Length: 181
Image (cartoon, rainbow, N blue to C red):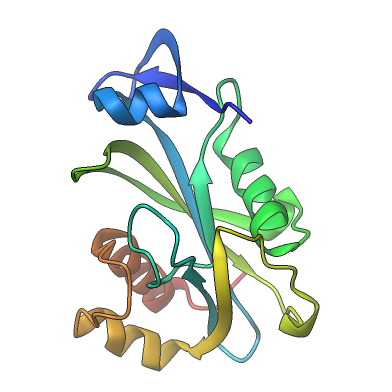
């Protein structure tokens, strides 16, 4: 599968260019990504453990799901697709709320990932025994009490991905809006 991304300028404007995933990551071209935090009625956050085979943050705990926005795709449609692909979770647009956006720039010896991120939240009870993990993407999932997740973020727990802006944005959002619909 050869994913393609709409290429953006530094400010998030569409340039009209479309590049393959490999080319975007090789050249450091700006593109879009999404992330979702799923919270249940017990105020637990569903976290995924990234596959030990991932190029970045291998084996670390991360938000519920996330990924790139395909060329021509909307962010909301992308996060609904990612939830289904990575975990087999069926979400509707009415269950997902936009939290905020943020630009990130991560470079290592393997790739240069420059994102205009969109962060989302969904409030839904899920039976994790019925979750279908996407091989090569996710090794494990678990529910974490919100208070414990908040502590992990505050302490910059080394078992979490260092996507601190995303994690901190979720904590701020949840502190303000909690489980209100």
